[in-house]
Each structure stands twice: as C-alpha cells, then as structure tokens.
Image (cartoon, rainbow, N blue to C red; front, top):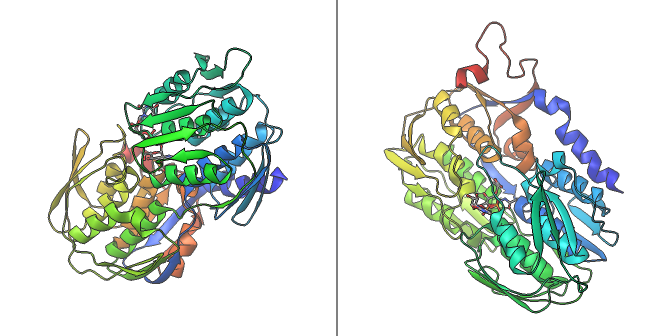
Length: 458
Ligand code: EPZ
C-alpha cells in the first residue's frame, strides 16, 4: 500500500507548497510544552537498513516529512512494499530488486544513496545514481565507495550512476578493516549496513559517532546483526548470513529539539520539550548555558528552557559529534544576531553552509563572512522582511529570527522546511507563536513593482 506513503508526498510537496509562504508576526512570548518528533536522519537511514531484511520490519516514531515520503517512493521503485499509518511504517524488502532508483528522486534525497550498502549486501549488485551536490556542498561519496571496495566490491561510476557488484560465485562481501579519512555519518552508515551480511569481521576506524549511527546499529542488532562500538569512533561488525524481522522505535530528533530550545531562548520564553534524549543535546545545551540561557532537566526525556533577559554572544565551531552539530549552526546564528556582543561562527563540516547570512542581514542582522567564519555582532532587535530559505536548516533559522523580529517576516521557499520539520507551524502555534502559511501569487517574483526577494538577494 505504497499509496498512503505516496499520498503524503502529494500533500506535502504539491505545487501549491511552492506558492505558499510563511508569515510570522514576531515578538510573541511562547509558553507550554512541545512533543519532539522522531529523528529525520534516523528514519531515513533505518528505512534503508530495512532492506537488509527479507521479511517485514516495523519502524515506530517515524516523522511525517517530505524526505520520509520521498524515501518511501524510492524504496517502492526497488520493489519494496511500504505502508505508513501515523508514525508507524511497515517495510517489506522480500522482493528487493536490483533495478536502479530514478536519478530525479535520488538527487533530491542524499540519504537514499546510503541504500547502496544494503542493496549490494542483499543482492550482490547495486546501481545507485550519484546523489549530486546540494545547497550546502558538493557532498562527495568517495568514502562510501572506497569502503565497499575494501570489502571486496567492484565499483565503477558510469553516467552518474555508481555500479557495484561482488565478483565470484559467493556473492558475499568480505569483512575488512577500513579507516575513514573523515568521520562521515553517511559513509559509516552505508558500510556498517553492508558489513552486517559480510563474511567475517569488519572494523570501521575513525567512524562517525552521531546518535543516528548508534540508532541504526541498534536497529540492525534488533534484526540479528552483530555490532559493537556504535557511538564510538571504532565500530566492529561480525557478519551473519541473514537478518530477521524487527519492530523498532527510532530516537527523537535532536536537531528539532535544539531548534525549539533556541525558539525559547530567542523569544525569552519558558517552554518544555518532551520525548527527547537530553544527552544528544549536550553540545547545544552547553552553548546555550554559556550564552546565559537556563536549560533545566525536568525528567528522563524532558528539558525546559527558562526566560533569559540578556543573551550573551559566544563563539561556535561546528564539528562531528560529540562536537557542536553543523545542523544547529544556522539556528544558533539567528540567536547570536540578537545576543549582546560579537560571536565567531565557524562552519568546518560543509563548505557552503553560510547562505542564511544574506537573509539574516535582510532582517537587520550585522554579520560579515570571512572564509568559513561568520562574524556576528549582536543588534538590539531584528525587523521583519520577506526572506528566501536556501536549505533545510537555514529555513529553521529564518523562522527563529522571524519569531524575534519586530513586525512581519515572510519566508519563501517553504519546501525546504517541509523536508525536515514535522508540523512546525502547528507546534509553534500551540506555544503561542503567531505564524501561518498563506498562499501568494508573488512566487519569488516581483510583485507591485517591488524588487523580488531573489533579485534583492543577488
Ligand atoms: C548527514 O549527512 C546528515 N544527513 C546531515 O544532515 C548532517 O549535516 C551530516 O550528516 C553531518 O552531521 C543525513 O543523515 C541524511 P557526512 P552526510 O558524510 O552523511 C564529507 C540535515 O540538515 N564527505 O558526515 O551526507 C562531506 O563532503 C542534513 O539534516 C566526504 O568527503 O554527511 C562533508 O564535508 C544536512 N566523502 C563531510 O564529509 C564522503 O564519502 C560530512 O559529511 C562522505 C562525506
């Protein structure tokens, strides 16, 4: 019943979404509690992980997102049957085929490339289009490819498609020791999944330690995989011949949680986050506390942010986990624009993840970019304006800035937001924020002779 998953694509990515903008009236105080959804970056890779299993798997706490719907569409093109009811997704990869997922889908969802590991491990052959770059960077996959080659796969890239196959009659990858030049999240996940069905032991050194990597390992273990060390920089996988069904609940989204903590801080409000894993937010909470924001633990899976009058600027450098997460950089930059003093925000993970600077400046922020560092000088207040979202986390930063700004902020490019935040407006409205989606004919074009948002931003 792919239709149900497919239909969520329709209502989330309909052409209207392109003509819908988000209007925010700033300076409301927020209050109340918000339930944080399941982690996007777990849901996507665990859906790929389900391809390792020839029986039905159930994933719970799956957020209803454009990216999840797209992943469902891509997997169904590979012969996988999927059914989504609420936050439960049933996936049956019994009839997984070696056909190639369509480029136009893979290019829109980098995470779908991670399926190359499970497909190759299950079928002995895989043809997956290169995902290509996106707004934040070139997004190469050399570590994925080199790791699969280390495990005995022959891999070539032809016409933008990565073709991998296991030579010989065995059709099984061989365990290997592989050092990752960079602790890539996706490469760690691709290789860990491939290794679960390999012959012998695989050791991934300098592996990514993100909670989503650990979540994927726990899901694979629940299917019978033998994995040790996930969440550390060395992961050991003992291959098994086959995996079995599992019913698994994914972790909460630490980036959505961090975004709401910043929403509380930037509006000087008190809000409670429910259904989270506080440990996954250690870097973001430490940075907020350095800025004078009080964040208190109110339960095993709760955090509360308290009203803070004087925010103090602080420096940030994004790093692989457990360092400060790159996916929180834009949101914290929004907070820095109205914090007392100057801060230096250095993006070390992606080469082009400062594009939200131009839009924040349109809202009155004082920011100068030098290389991969943004120098932010706090201003007393932002003032609302039309702005253009350029990527998922940039759009979250613009929502946060709009909540703090005087007057009305209109955000264009909402399809970015729908990729990664489940029901963001509803959650914000429930907390008292004044924001709503409105249809507009000014689809980033000049309207009434005013310069279009895009032309102003050039
Ligand atoms: C994952 O992307 C996340 N996406 C990203 O979240 C997140 O920002 C990123 O990890 C870092 O935490 C998903 O999990 C679906 P990487 P991924 O491989 O795996 C370089 C969001 O907003 N690299 O850790 O693609 C790469 O160019 C998204 O939710 C290679 O050089 O990230 C980058 O500079 C954005 N060769 C750095 O590593 C490779 O083979 C980190 O990339 C792979 C990566």
